Image (spheres, rainbow, N blue to C red):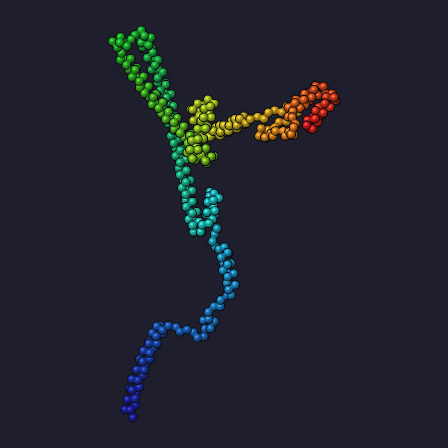
Length: 353
């Protein structure tokens, strides 16, 4: 009995160890299967989620689509055209899609900024050039004044030392034979050097005047074109310049003064030219004859028809007119009732004729 119990215990222990090992392997296999297996659909989910959504009626769907098309997008901001665009450019800008409007707006602002920057650079360069010109003009004026201060004493010393040469009592040939000749040559070299310096200063002065005149003309023309954009056409600008120049020359204004005319003066000249042209055109209109006492003036453009005469009636209108004129003149002189009655009878006889 003891041997059987031991045998059973050994068998049971072996069996329990194997069962525990088998249980562990089964759990590991179940865990791996849970990770690899896809979740199955839940049968407890409501059936409404699997059903297809119900479609709206056709009329309601079309109305919703139309409302969606006509309603503006509240999140899309309105893109305004640049402020310097004209009416036509604004219309073209408004017809573009929003993406193109943004591109055009960026391009326009960048172009405007570049133009403003170039304009500022140009104005700064002009100011710098003007400062340089002013400094050069001041230096030139200082040199001219100093040169004159230097020239006067030299000329005075020359007149004092060579008065006989200036008066003709000493000629250059005899002077060259004396010891005064080197001093005379030194004075001549000094006068030559002073003359060269004066020529250089005069040349610089002319250059300054030309630069100032060029700047004046450019400024005046820019103001003129800004006031009259049609003068951007070179042909129209040349015609305008020729008309103004001929008008001023007609009044004896020299060309040097015409070139110095500024924009304000040019505006006054233009108004005067138009006024003279209007007066000339008015003078060329033929005047209407003045009406005498009791006469009626017929304008020249009104056509007068000949008087219609009855068959067999002599044309004695001229005689009647002379008689009426004589009777009327007699009435003015006398003022009597008889002359007035005579005039009425004459007028009645002409009307009945």
